[in-house]
Length: 302
Length: 226
Image 1 (cartoon, rainbow over the protein chains, first blue to last red):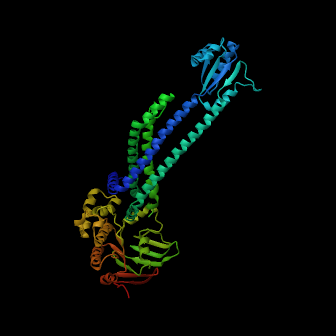
Image 2 (cartoon, one colour; image 1 turned 30 degrees about the vertical axis):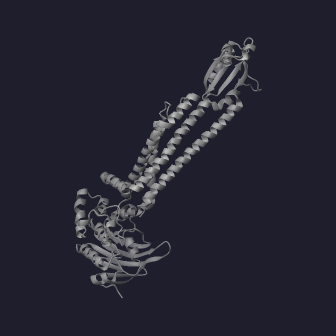
Image 3 (cartoon, rainbow over the protein chains, first blue to last red; image 1 turned 60 degrees about the vertical axis):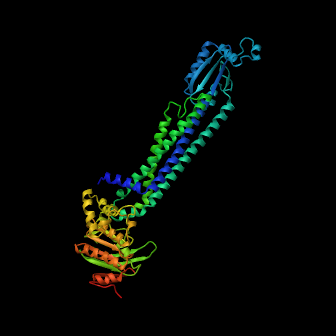
């Protein structure tokens, strides 16, 4: 017994006649999902900033001045062979001096330099900066001395560790806030839809008493729940669109200009915004549908 | 048509609502179920539409034992039993037409049939002119007539009425009884629970009296009692 026309007309007349309840549900969905969506974008950007700061972390391996070409070659191959290695850059003594001069242009310190006291080095960036401790250890032998050809390994051990624990905390907090907001949204939407079904429990009872099957009772309510979730989330992405277009994109441009960060939600190439919009609509529709389904369970049993 | 064998109902709070009821109601009969409040009349009716389950015994409707009915078969049972309630149980946000049409939509009748049947039954109960009114725009008697129309629109072989005149004044009640009689005349088995003495006395139909969950009297062409 498939009667799509009955179910559609039932859904829409019911939405029309229970306008206030439907309106309340739609606004609740719109507001809560707007907050969740906006916060998700902020969190994405914070994560972008964090990973950009992390990837700036470098390991510098200073080489002994008299290192042989073979050994240098050998060490470079050794570094490249590690799976943690993202990139290795060789900085010769001359390049190091050049850079030093540039960094200290006009300073008195340059006059005091005789010859080239700076060592050649490898600068290593890692695909997972958190493993920097482990990677650094490979330049030591069993007795705690540097391996042959290496003079010093520098990566700001304390700075890096503090940075990682702070970013880990920020990441966790952001994640928890997103979860909490999402939970709050789910609970609010669920309660609103449950209330609107509760208000019509008599109607369900009558349907059951005149011989409606459970699915016959459920389907219009499920349509309605889905529609409310869907409509609410569409409103929320319209709100998101405007706040992104007129406010958040400016914030991101400032971040991009000042911090040289490439991947942010709006200005990035990753289409994060589209996925956020799609996600909001999917979540909205699903919450509406599931809320109705769960809320109905009690009342359908007559 | 309806047969109850050793039916008992004990509620969860240990109230005994019905004790060992044995009763046969024949096809086409008009039966009053009388007795004071709390004597088990409503429980009796709720058992027949499986709104509640019996504690003991068996109920046969059209030869079929409804006590071991799967829950998925309950809607089918209810479609063969029209039900009129003391509080009408109309859907407040549907019009008179829609309330009645609903009983047909539930059983999957096509739209054109609904368009024909609903006005017909509304004429039967005298509410054809109020097709598009909402329940709150109707008087109590009119609402009850809508409820009767809804119960009867798919021509069920059995019609149950639980205190259908409980909220109505005598004149209005008489109108409802006329409709129920007419429905009975065309072959429908009607079972009506009531404690409306005047109605029972004026109709002279079979009377079954309940007291504290037991049948104390079963009388053809009976009256309400003392």
